[in-house]
Amino acid sequence: EAQVTQNPRYLITVTGKKLTVTCSQNMNHEYMSWYRQDPGLGLRQIYYSMNVEVTDKGDVPEGYKVSRKEKRNFPLILESPSPNQTSLYFCASSLWQGSDSPLHFGNGTRLTVT
Amino acid sequence: KQEVTQIPAALSVPEGENLVLNCSFTDSAIYNLQWFRQDPGKGLTSLLLIQSSQREQTSGRLNASLDKSSGRSTLYIAASQPGDSATYLCAVRTSGFKTIFGAGTRLFVKA
Image 1 (cartoon, rainbow over the protein chains, first blue to last red):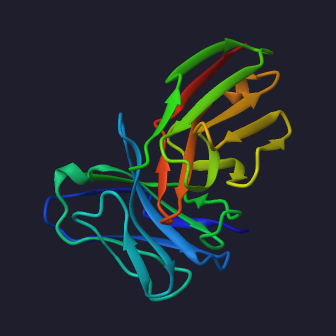
Image 2: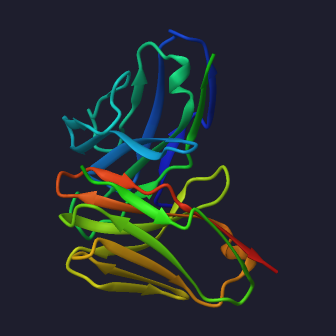
């Protein structure tokens, strides 16, 4: 089944403890992206990648890192999480960055930083 | 800077009613506009994608239109059902490959 898989679904951690949220897609998509969703603020783009080894900042990149060493994987790294990074995170992918390629979303990761 | 606005923020309608959800954007230089559905605590499901060169797309009871010159898109839902209850999001992909989302319209269809 074609899908975007995020892990874990739920994560509770403490301030400053490094964590990684994984994202993998099995559709051979070139474009991948991370978003956070917060009440009243909607979905905001953190980082995106147009292909292997090509990444760029979205609107809210501070405090996050990403890497794209393989086409299928796009992990989100929080080197030193803080409580303001408590949020619902989504990974998405599309075949390419063109106008006819819809975004496909994972099921989300709910992160709580205490 | 591109901004995307959705009106209304919430909508409650009786079953069977036809309804229109609105999405407006400030910069007409877009690659595409995509409508999503989100159920509580769940991910986003793609409903329709309209490319910048297109005026509308249809899927079943759903019809989405795009007017780039006025910076507006509408999602028309025909013969609404309780199962349509969800939050509907529109998202604009910009020429810089970013995706900007609206805050969503929360729809409740009463049986």
